[in-house]
Length: 352
Image (cartoon, rainbow, N blue to C red; front, side, top):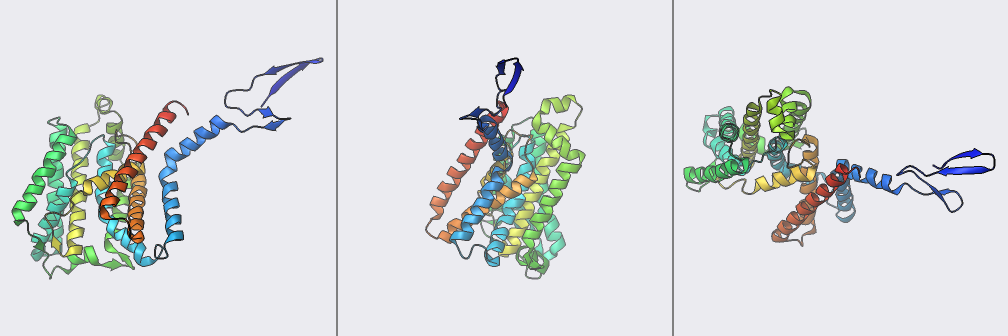
């Protein structure tokens, strides 16, 4: 606002501060455009994915009668619950500044291991599948933390090797789940309080992940390692232990997704999870977690998973978008989100 000091009949006008509103056209206040732009950019940076999710849901409600039916919504949640489990592990890894390309292959290993052990009972089958995934994830973490090999190289090698093991051990054939293992099949096909069991598992996993990052020492160390690993080491943090634990959790969650998928299909598939690592990375990035590490969280990944899942559900409801063009649109959408995030980060770094 204009500030004036009057002395007798004379007045000296003090120029307005940068970003402050000023009066034009007979005293009408003009909007503080730079400040509004900065606030809009900050809002988009923090909540842009939520705004996009709401907009997509409104569009689906207006255009498709079947969109808000319980059958369709539960179908979306069930289909994306396994992507969500993998994306949760990927979130932890990316927060440390790493990447895990092996999750699709680890998912397959977890599924076929559990299916092969299903004759021994549900508990043994599930435990075996989860242990197999955690072991492979631990191997990734050891090579990254102790051998100082780049996460991209380590997890790429694990992706190839684990997929080869899955195909070779099964002779490229599915491994059927024993019919007596009803609890195993229930994990993939059952319902509890009307909600599919895979949705409950994903929700509980995300809740546990959120609480772990927010309230535990491990969560603080994850952010510290991703923000500046060298500084974290100088502060005395056990960064190697954090990295090993993080990749072990990523493998565990990928294997859990494989167990759920095997229960749903009634068999462990050696080709299961092919490409799911890209879906998980896309969901994490769309949610707003930075690939450079140190910024993001579990809640944003939930929104990213839901946003991508609903978008592809709309493609299916439309019925005219082929799977090939869905892949093209998926890539374009992801690229657009990354570009927008980069511009918003640049503006925030320059103070708007």
